[in-house]
Length: 195
Image (cartoon, rainbow, N blue to C red; front, side):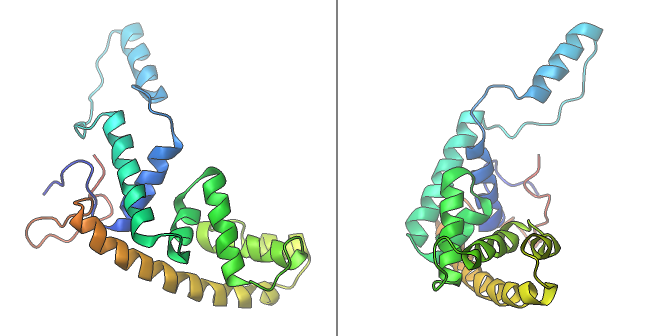
């Protein structure tokens, strides 16, 4: 069963797509499309095209803005909002949110201290997977266990707040028809929204 274009099976997927769409400019054709058209003209051949979603780049951008606004309206300036924005957002907003999460995890660390820098890097590791803990150990000349213990504790805190935020978003995004269930008893898969 196919899902209507611009709808998703879970809030996390909707947020990831929204922030990705907002990170790129609206363009009528991406570089791959331009290359394919140039090759078609040069070699006088046709390429099999995948079915389009039916949404224009402007429609996708508008859907992304709408999704992010639902996120902002639902979660406000709370830590759940900053966790999701730091995980999926880009630019200054993503960096600001990552710092807010870092300050939430370790409020006692002074602003320009080594402890704050380590907490910032652990926050990036938890939310984005980079840098690796081994790289942080080398960078700060610390034993692995010294960073692994706080990273595990921070991960538990972040995951709890993240799950709570996604649960709140699930309700709101279903009401706004951003997240919809497939008809019937078909379980969603990771490829549901890929056209």
